[in-house]
Length: 87
Image (cartoon, one colour):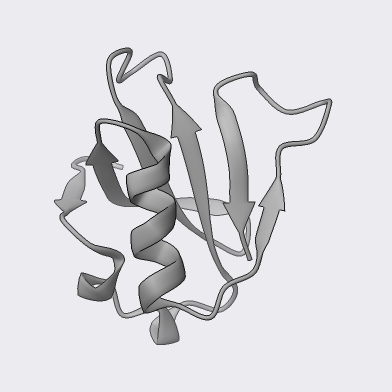
């Protein structure tokens, strides 16, 4: 991806155009070591859309409020910065 689009809320994203939308929530990932980041994926592939907040709870609140996606917590094999994924 050539550029990143940062949105303030997941409601700014038209998830209906994605084949299988997922939103992965990270706490202090390598590329944002002082922030929490939600990355939008489509069918397991990253898109260029992210949300950034001070903590993952703010991101999770927004995603729960504006989508019908279901929360799946991080698995043992996932990267440590991953909090979980909305499917």
